[in-house]
Image (tube, rainbow, N blue to C red; front, side):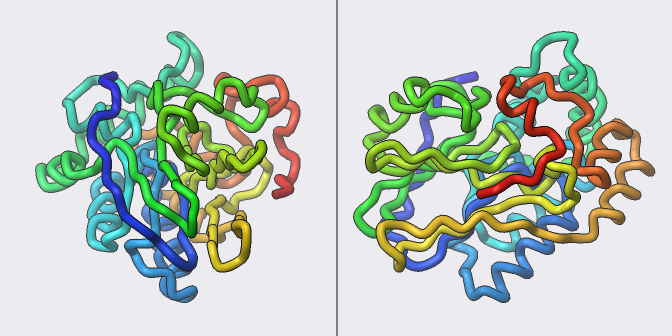
Amino acid sequence: MDKKIKALNLGSITGKVLLFGGVYSNLQALEALIAYAVKEGIPPENCICTGDIVGYCAQPEETIQTFKNWNAKSILGNVEIQLRDDQDHCGCDFKAGSQCDNLSQQWYPYAKSKLSKDSLSYLNSIPDYITFTLGQQKVTVLHGSYFNISEFIFKSTPWEKKRPNFEITQSDIIIAGHSGLPFYNKVDNNYWINPGVIGMPANDGNSKVWFTVIDDSIKPIDIQFRKLDYNHKLTHTLMINAPLPEAYAKTILSGIWDNMDILPETEKKQQGQPIQL
């Protein structure tokens, strides 16, 4: 994929910022998240997605239109880039022949077939990355990494792999998605935060999904990882009734990933365990 070239600078943000990723065409989860933001008084301009609005679930068109009408911010995930460019695969960087790769050959064509011209046009308006200032700290929102939109970065990924992202963006805080698991690392005064995804559970044996709220009113920075409950049974039913992989539909209920192809050994050992953040 082409290197990131389009940036959106939001300027200075104060108060609570709601961060999330991987909506994955899960309309019910998105609607629940919007309700949470309204309840907490977090304005749409302070709600930021790390990409992959479209993905494994059954309502890609409805999800994009709901997100668009919400007026929240998002960066491009690899899926949006592939759809925007009329590519025939998701660009997730799954290993060829892996279970993830095989399943993507079912859900990606389905998603592509459902999107309207208006939704595809909306994808053209989404930036490659977002920057803003929170307090005195510069924040950059990426999908995988600055160097590779489809790079899988986990908590166990060595800091030596993460550090160049701070250096090239001159950031204090990196917000990144793609890997599907919530975590944060802090080294010196730098934070790497993956806020989690709302479209699929985090392989922890729980149907609830994850997002994060950061707040500069509590110094040096308050990071609150949150679980989101939503109508996952409806999501499951819609997936079963569509030509979509049964494996992902099962994950919606069980909270357990069908496979762990993308995970390092450390994260594989944590399957089914409650996430403590």
